[in-house]
Length: 220
Image (tube, rainbow, N blue to C red; front, side, top):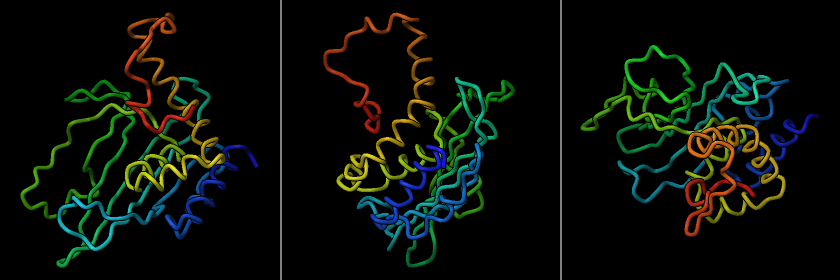
């Protein structure tokens, strides 16, 4: 078993032991030899107190597919990443959705960062939105996520911080996330830094800020 497959198995065990995912079969069977195709990996989460409308439960579904490549800068292709949140209110089911697009074309009507996180999409296109105004913007620049970073994104945003910190401190989980951040986030972050300081970034000193102020999920 490759290191990556081992990471996925370890994370599946953690999710099951913490009772966050009752069925991890989409995760276990979703990665094969450089190809990821995971559909509807379901996370059971607590309902945030400021959720509108009031719902009796919330489930988060993660869909992600891509192919790994030998490109060290952007090591994935045929990329699709979608998060769907579902809840139940008195009159029926409600949904929300986010997706991370990879779009490197220049033929768009509006600015598209190559990787951008956007709310909405096809998941809620045909739903009754009430008084909500749904737009395809803003497209929030965000680093690429593989399945490991995708799971970490869900946990860090939808699981209470004390539980997330317990998971984050697990040595097997930490190893998986650190490896994925090195592969997918390091080139992204360094390319941004290179815009200002070329190869001399090591000379920059910060007194009051650190990388974790802006990306709390970074692993040392």
